[in-house]
Image (cartoon, rainbow, N blue to C red; front, side):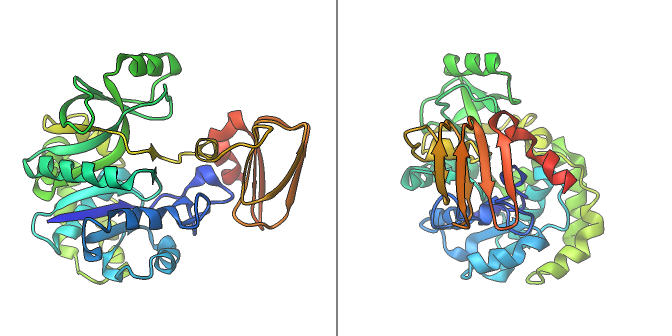
Length: 349
């Protein structure tokens, strides 16, 4: 039984002020006329009935989620009582799904990624489903197009597209020199953060490699009450806090011996920060990327100017390599080289 778990609990801090805790990146319509989570949801509808799509999020984001995905049954919203990283989220979410379907095959997806070729993506998901049904934990590795330092990598012996191959190890985000070696070798793939597995397989892996997560889930199971929504989150909160804060990579993927990787190429972009706008949209004659705002620029080059609505005109004079993000409440002016430090502003606010 194929099911989907869309992870939508992130706060999207790297897109502040466009993104906020109440309405994070995945709920914004800044890359198209649809939100990222709407795109993720519609992308998989050709594969399954909507009742087999579950969305994991936090309580604060539920109202905006319901407003965006009006057709989603409230019982398919899995509310996490706290953020305890991806190992906890995947263990908890897949266990909730298992209450509806016996030993389901679960596809874990991010809510805030863009995929250009939906047909190719769905083709790869079906290949992954077959591998998962044979007892593997499957992940999708993206064929790199340049040496990226912002992604983790997966080493493989065979990077043939759409051909499942054994993982030779996960690698942390590298420095540029290492990323260049990875790229040139042809033996490393970008870690997409997408996983496919049978429920009993992931639970066995947690029991073997991350006992804390397995034991915590076992303590939570008796507390589950289907269709209770927020009440369920409140009931399990004390037990949920026992989860170690650990990613699924550290908890399972770097240790298990049944990890299979499918090298993939379907126009994937994780939309990680403001520079994603430069990759996704055409630049003007001054190499500025302008989105959702009326902009006048004079002697200004290589800037990113974005807004979540046409609130006002932005005028640039003699400004280069900057990010300008405009909302009705805040304006961010940031050197591109400081793009990763936006959280410092949020802490002050």
